[in-house]
Length: 68
Image 1 (cartoon, helix red, strand yellow):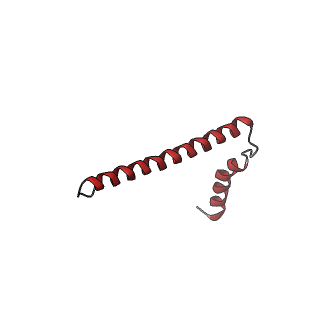
Image 2: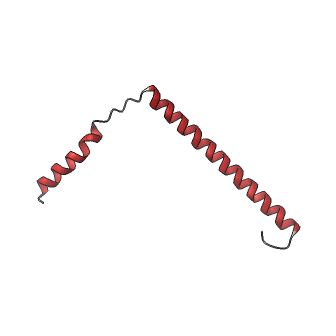
Image 3: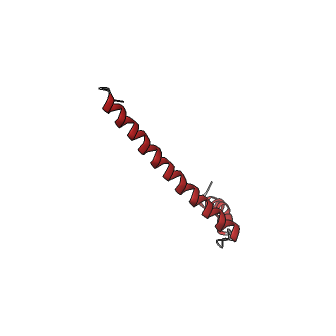
């Protein structure tokens, strides 16, 4: 496969990406807001779970001589 053929194939693969519309409609913006809210909620719950786990481990270590 020569260079010209490779360039042509790459151009054919990249062309659909250039045709994408970057203007987001209302539904797209709403979806992005929902995604952001879910990500923030997940992060908050992960942090809370980590804190609870640390608290349980600390309490376990206080009442026993073992590394919990």
